Length: 200
Image (cartoon, rainbow, N blue to C red; front, side, top):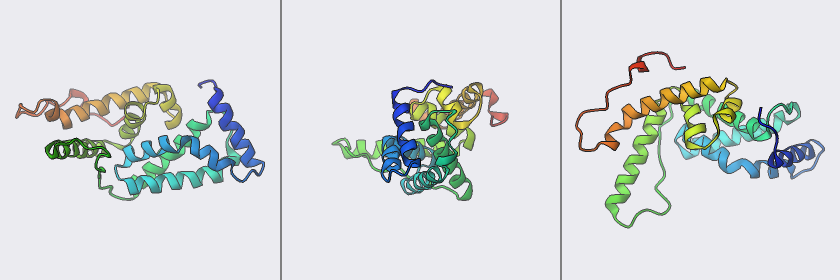
């Protein structure tokens, strides 16, 4: 378990204040993490509306579960575990249709805008096609910047399992997106040998 730092001490203080009845403490706590929670949800689900709903569900779940926080992990780990679970629950309940918003600052050339958007859609489709466990791991580690150890704590699995899932996810993405790296090659990237195995 990662040792609590100054940020975690502030999170714990806000959580304690919330439990003591401070009316704005929980909102302040969420405000410290909402952007990253949103990024995890968006990368996992692919749709901004679904991501917003998942973050809202997770926030409500965290509010209700605050009294049961045992303190054996960092508060941010606890919050992101709830977000990931909310995303996976939502993904299991419905077929998610990946959509990607237009870039806020598109390149001047409209052809570049279209090419960039097409690439974003293809990447999101490839992510959506991953098994849920692999998608959650690679979103946390490669797309959101969590360490393997933090991702393991969030997902409540051993670090070695996180590494294995990320490896398999990267291999699948290399197959699905290989043509983006080699646009001149008509041949698809050959599949990795271990992809025919399980989805650990």
